[in-house]
Length: 394
Ligand code: ASP
Image (cartoon, rainbow, N blue to C red):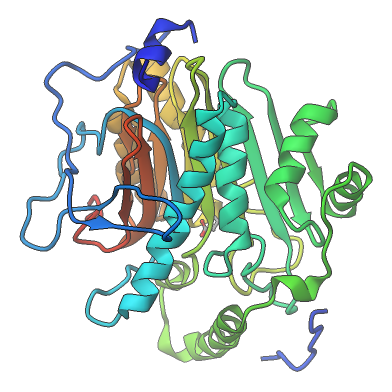
């Protein structure tokens, strides 16, 4: 039996280098006839060990998905994002870098697929997918997390289960190798929802999670980004660069996942190093249930990325759910309303990935780019990294 039929069938010190001064019930499906935007494309393979179909999105010249009520895809069981922000440019992105991004997203999707194929829960699937992205230095989560203003790293993560609204999160952790595991641990092994700082690190360590020192998170690219941010900060006093532009430049790389399992239960997870050059102690939307992450079987699983302060103020991910539940919107219309209409009115750009238990998926973003990908019940993987594959919704 296919996964889709099963779903409907079952009720389912670093370098403490002081020298750096320098996001009623809902209809179980979208309206009949609601078109799906993205279609199949050229095959790519990720690794020789596995023969698999990896599809990319439409190339230049092909019609974009478009339309605020149109989901990007149907029959999706898992989706991931690798952050919203300034778009990758086809002209200047080397083939090696393109491959690295697509492989990173596809590897995360395949890790989640393995869990789902074995009958694992959507929570386990999103955790597995996010863990892979945390381990990939290209993304701003776990290894490769951005730097705080003081050249340290403080990481945030959260997870939520759609069947019973159970949730867990960690904020400002400094030594967990995989903050998403800390978030899941808080959900499953504590009576709390959110642990922060040292308490979160200690809780994770006491339960056997892998710990690391701050230098583990270091990457040259993030270091260079910190230096650039410091320089821009100094320059902004004269150049008057908008905070939004600065945020877009800096925010790419947060990771997240949404999934639906054989029981028809949805889950969402999000993990981040936050924003480059953020003040120590700053906590973004990613670990906040209802802002960066939300999951409810009756509506959708949603993971956000973007300018966190706005996603907090706009209660981004829970608003997507509430618009579905109380206004009767489909997931695509609800996500569009939040990402393209509400948050930009506050001043915030970014995007979400959103998935219903029926496999309807959408990934609207108001930022120029949002790295993301999804896995269908048939095992197809689609990755989208360039704006012509996934145009910004404006
Ligand atoms: N939302 C994250 C934060 O504000 C950043 C991002 O998504 O890039 O911490």
